Length: 225
Image (cartoon, rainbow, N blue to C red):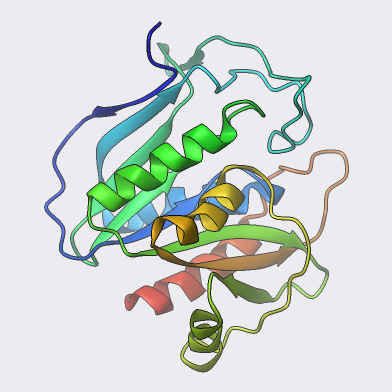
């Protein structure tokens, strides 16, 4: 295969200054759940899929976002509803509000930067200037806290949206890299971290209550309920 990471278009997106919303499987699957709920809520349509030879169908690491150079995962397809398809990142478009919703997938250690850059290039090509990432962090108080790529944006999310800056630590995996690399590519980004209690036997076990809190805060930022 000549290409290691590539995008296949599924439709056109004629959006005016869209905001990109990004989430992926991660701590208690909060980002993944919020993206799925947002797609259903807005009735967004699929516009593109990103595939990569660096995306395993089975991870050798637990959790999946803890990429390790010696544990690349196992290649293969994923069968769902009787159909087989490769692991992928999916882009959905919504015109009201103007959004590109990005359902992430964790690449392995070798390809994780390549995939994140490809995602950001696609968003830039579609005139995205602001990205909102949704993820989880370990906390018993279950608050929503934030982070951003500039001091000005940190001040904005505090003053305009009432979001405190409370999380300190690593932000691993697909969403973390998209968040971090966005600044290098001229896009501003903020992140909503939803507090959730760790479930040691399955760190990615879905926390719907936490994802609902994150979705509610995200909806207010985006201006719809």
